[in-house]
Amino acid sequence: MADLSTNVGGIRSPNPFWLASAPPTNSGYQVMRAFEAGWGGAVWKTLTDDPIVNVSSRFAGLSWKGQPMVGMNNIELISDRPLEDNLREIREVKQAFPDRAVVASLMIEPKRERWHEVVKRVQDAGVDGFELNFGCPHGMSERGMGAAVGQVPELVRQNTEWVVEVAEVPVIVKLTPNITDVRHTARAAVQGGAHAVSMINTINSLMGVDLDTWNPIPHVDGRGAHGGYCGPAVKPIALHMVGDCARDPEVTVPISGIGGVASWQDAVEFLLMGASNVQVCTAAMYYGFRIVEDMIDGLNQYLDARGIASVQEIVGQSVPRYGDWNDLNLSYKVVARIDQDKCIHCNRCYIACEDAAHQCIDRVQTAGRETQLVVDETECVGCNLCSMVCPVEDCITMVQVETGRPPQTWRERQLQA
Image (tube, rainbow, N blue to C red):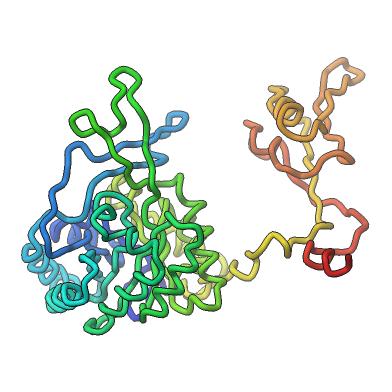
């Protein structure tokens, strides 16, 4: 069995699977049940010193072709439980599970004295680290907290500095995706003294509108507000931001990857793209805490099958292969090949190519008068659309072909011009 233990900026845990700060980490009862199921760590639902009030209702799910909750929207705010109750339960959890990572998410009004006071109180409860919530996009941002801080690099740096001044445990800064380039705020967090960054928080969203009542979804007494979008649908956005920060020489701290992680395969993708661990929320809300058993087992089998002794050995392995479009090889080409034995003649590839791509699939009449779909490889640009719409597994494959041209990037082409 491989070593699954991780170290994120000084916060150690027996495996890379943490519960993200969210409803599943709202109480000591929940976090203890999660740890019993096998989670390596938990980021406690965001704490503050000024009681807030939540609304009803709060969640909405996006279904796609019979698959519920491929995306999820919420307008819930941070913890509405008394800070003292949370601190008492943190102590109890840490005493019962000393080897698990217990990280306190914090969101405080951006004033130095208030940060100092709360950080000292919370770390006295025995937390292994802090995660500063500079990412929540709704409710609290309208009050100058959450994403209102996370969208301004100078505020990220300043608020991080205030925490690091008194924190005796590692500090993670959780970043908002609701920004043009997350690297700017990640760099600011590093400049402020952060020991790690985490990304992404939820994305601004409106899930839908009820066609009968015309109310936004979800609604609160007939009115709606933008919320935070999460779940499997946001994974590509999260991976992009993790990869961008992992290859940025100014982001010199570990990354905790968040956003649509629902399986061990998702976790491996985040690790390969530079995350040192992953945080999970929506999948745990959908499947329950025991989903971590499959994640741990799958990751172990994946590493063992490749003879990899430690999960840390795969962190960032794909980062050197991810970069700017200008560095891609313009001479590389793939074309589509259709397996005639597997083709069911649904014509979806033909319609997609004819209407929305490059008109390079021909309907050819055979001697037996059966019509076959055949790719004109001289016209095929390798866009992948036909293989994406084909309903038969491995019927259409993309195959590399020689172009006779030497490798050349756009950057090299411009230098020669």
